[in-house]
Image (cartoon, rainbow, N blue to C red; front, side, top):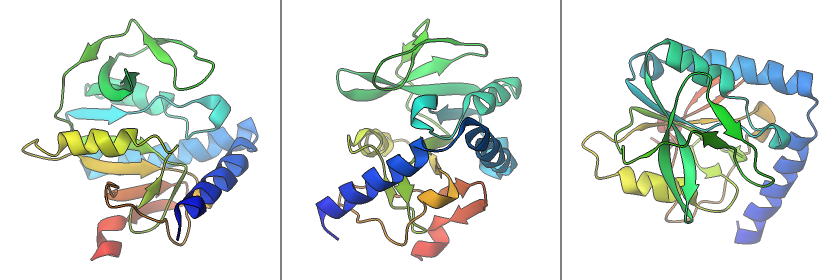
Length: 197
């Protein structure tokens, strides 16, 4: 597939995702987060990095999951874009956010840290295939973020989350793309490592 194929798939999936009504979005999101909570990697994790969902984009809703992580006494981090680079910011229970017109909300207070050791990173997806190839928003933030974590003694477990209709037969992958270990949808957990072996 060509680059323009990836962009076409991205736009088609974004249109479909944004068209979900709020009730369906919340119900499917809850099912996805329930599957996440069952994962051994999540239950045994000490540090979890997970995005804060943008409701207007109908990303899988993560706020209840983030609060659950805090209740489980885990260290919770979220992405923050600083000068075009994704860095980690601390998430605390009941965190307030400043909404942005474009892009993810900003935590208030914002506590950026240089933590680079995560047991699990939960990744938002626009699309994915069973091998763990992913389509994001096209900015490359997570690819560069994962590349920067490679030097860690124990690389993080990479869990992508999306709705079932965002799974496609094949995502055109670039050489720099970072593959996921699993993808979680409302329908269950897809082991991408098995699909690649």
